[in-house]
Length: 474
Image (tube, rainbow, N blue to C red; front, side):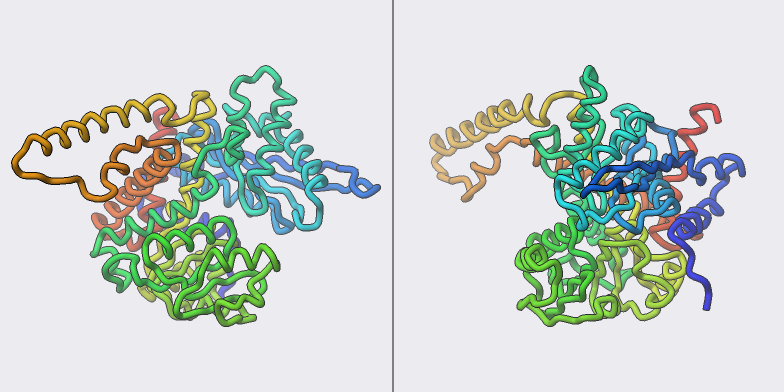
């Protein structure tokens, strides 16, 4: 059996597939591919009467734009190769969706479930201190965000630690993104990656010829969906496509097994069950299957892997029956599995595009922190005033006309409401996902040597990065 490539090897193999189709000098190609630097830190924290040593990483892949951007994950599985692969994906992702960041990523080898909140705060603050004193957390140089095992809570601790170390930095809030609203966050950030997955699917189905490549027609309405991983990304993606677009989530896979219900699963109720019990077992809204991985091979229209990398690999790729796979997680399909799926005719919406909603809204949050003003604060009421003038004029014309007419129910209320921060964030995210998809599909359809969306995405990203380096004189 062919050896399974590692996550980092998979990223490099996919990079090489695209770079082989480009006219890049060997030196520039290598400069774009390699990781610039990785910092490894080992620090001790006194916990439960003894000193516990933790190992953490922060990798910077590319500084063609600064600051560099990328999440911090807390997991016992964190290692240097994983962090460097994720940093590389961040570089390509930012270039694809045109956010002005280089790629970075970080991780800490820790099980957040093994420590209480106070202990996790001490661990997180010490890790933040070790990174910040080396400028690996800085609004102008390196801006972390939440990832697997971290969230708003950890980002709030980190920004507070940074403020303690940099008491005169007026832009301190911009040192991380994904913060709570009361600590400088932005509305829509928590849901951003899952919302981006929804917008990516909507954009895909706007093009009947693209859907036809996956053997699908119409819209998301009525499509059967399997979600692997009901964390932040998987939960929001599943919730939005089922509640707002009419898709039917027929199975959810978690670490302790899977729930299957051909008639559809209520995502909110299942999420509550997982929070209460720690898993899907015992959920009454579907059939429990202990071997969750086997459900990846169940019939469905759309498969959404939204957890760890490498879940679809050489051992199961041939048995995957989904027509369309959208990579909500980073690297859920290995390079070997990718080849098998392409030969089967499965359409894959690649991770560097599909899960870019998080970094897109992080960009909005970073801009908000630097501008020191909430989006919508200056223009919302002015918009409402202009809309009111139009409504008043329409109603005046109706009253003076022999032909009486009225505005449809709900129109006046909806039209008069000016855009606040959440509406502007969603608008900006939707626009970003549409433009990025269009840039990919143009390459996909116009070039005979481009077989799939992943290569198209890499071609767009690498070209933009190459132009950045060339403009710098490299």
